[in-house]
Image: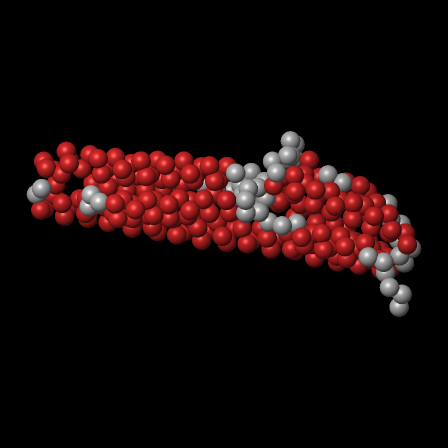
Length: 258
C-alpha cells in the first residue's frame, strides 16, 4: 500500500499547488502578466517544463514496465530450471530421490516467502535467498555416481541447481525495489512547477477546476504505476508465484510407467 499512499500524497501536493496558483493569480497577474511579452515568456517556460515532465514520466513508466516483465520472466525461467533439474534427477535413478524431495521442499518454501513478501511479513529477507537450498546442494553432492552417465547427470544437476539458487538470490535482491527516488523527486518538482503555472493562467470556473483535478489525477496514476511496478514482489501489483506452483505440481506428480 506504500505506492498508493505516496501517489495520493503527491496528488494532494500537486493539486494543492495548482489551487494555490489559482488563488494567487489575481495578485500575480496584474503586475507581472499583463504585459504580452511577459505572458508569452511565462508560457514558453511552462512548455519546456511540461515537455521535460512528460518525457520523464513516459520513460519512467516504460522502464518500470520493462523491469517488471524482466522479473516475471526470471521467475518463469526459474520454474523451467526446476522442472529440468527434476528430470535430470529422475534420470539419475532412485539414489537421487532425496535430492528430488529437497528440491520440491525448497520451491514450496520459496512460494511461501513470495507470499509473505507480498504481505510485508518477511522479517529477515536475506533468509529468502538461501532457505532450504543448502540441503538440496548437500543431497546432490552426496550422490555417488557409478557410471559415466550418472557422473554427467550429477554435474548437470549441480549446474542447474546453481541456476535455481542464482534466480532465488535475484528475487531476494528485488524485494527492496529498484526505483530511483531522486528521479521521482525531480519529476514531482517539475509537476509542482507545471501545475502552479497552469493554475495561474487557467480560467476561473468549475469546468477548468475539474480539468485541473483530472490532470493531476492522471499524473498521480502514472507515478503510482512507476512506484508499484518497481516493487515486483510487494504491493497491489505483484508477480504471481503461479509458475513455481505449477513446477511443484509437475515434479511431485507420480511418474507414469513407460
